[in-house]
Length: 449
Ligand code: UDP
Image 1 (cartoon, rainbow, N blue to C red):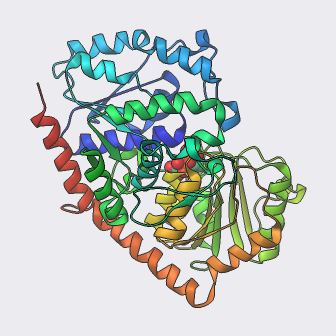
Image 2 (image 1 turned 135 degrees about the vertical axis):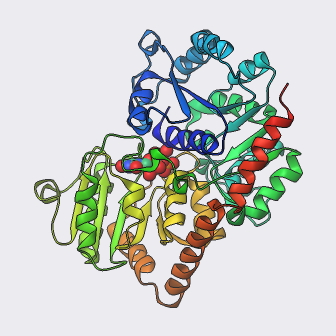
């Protein structure tokens, strides 16, 4: 599983454990090894690593970029075999003094349905999406919109949304990656048949969308986030990855910068810009005259001076994995250039900083619409479809808008701060997400066989 799913899934597990649930987290040996340091011997999560013969399936041990994903056929073969692969974990759970009363499965694991059925317990899905995107995709499917849309560039409106959302096909996860269409359909079916969804979001952020989802599906949607704010051990330092840089080094550098003066740039765990795009971004960051911290994976196209001298007065270039939540929470960060992966965008919301929305693939184009048009805490960089090149001048302009931006810039920063405050209140005792976790646990207890 990619880090964008692993991190919030583990946070959700930890949150439920903190609220008194007994939680078993089933994952692969690689992920278990990454997560284990976050668990003290007395931590209330037992981590079960699957004896998971991924190499027999030709699956990569880990996936460092979207292009490196295994083929859909291979993934399907793995899905088919997954129940058998899970047999030892299921045997373990059967012998457990408290067998499961609920399965929360990543939406990429449609086969978890059968496991929940075997135990006779509810199955809830977690997709990593917010409610806005979940609803967009569901409504497009329910109304058969995509079958009626001809060309890739034809603009259409998503039905049943509280506010108009206009898209082109290339901005949707399945359409952008045609080879995953069938798999995505399976996932959506599994989501549709689940007893409810768990969302890394909070009521105040998406109230209208959550209500419409509940009304139209008749199902529960538990918004229990932002999970990055939850007080659990996986939140410290290097959630999900081996840091290529020391947290203290990043924070020291930030400590020496003026408040709100730094632009933080990151494209998530798998986002890669093309070499020409990397060069354009480097040019724009330099030309902006602003302080910046740029976390880059790969790094083809990075100017030589950035490689030779990654840390200067004005810049810090981190090649690899960075402690993002700690960086974003630092007072020196004044803006966030993000690929709009939902974890990152929500972490930006929590930090109360305005964003430059730069979607690359998947549902990121939908998140961009939420951040820019609905929440109005971001400025779009203007990519219309995956792979579109954005020129340096355009990037510079959006940086200026987000960091300054005249009257609208001031209002945007105020909205961002207010949302950050709401996010913190949501996770406090009796806040909306706290209450939703209580409701979720009550639901599970009520449906216990
Ligand atoms: N992340 C991090 N350091 C990095 C890159 C990513 O801590 O160098 C974390 C980030 O804070 C977020 C997650 O990894 O929690 C990335 O998830 P997101 O949904 O934003 O994007 P994805 O990687 O799935 O595209």
